[in-house]
Length: 100
Image (cartoon, rainbow, N blue to C red; front, top):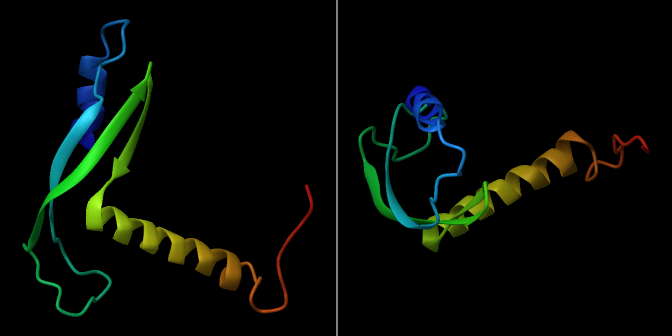
């Protein structure tokens, strides 16, 4: 993360936004298993994960594609459902909600 911030600071000298639109592939490497997942091996890699960047001026968005994108979407959806349904009480009959 520090490298990314340094790169943003060093590369931010111009007035025009950088053109980053395109499709890239990324590799991921397993680190320490803090969540105690079964069959987790430190150092295993997942390679060739496609990520597509679209750009409109200085606004950039990234889309993880393929099976990795589906798993990421499923994981984030389950996390959101847990936060709303269990933590905030929607599924328990005692929802925590205050009108704005």
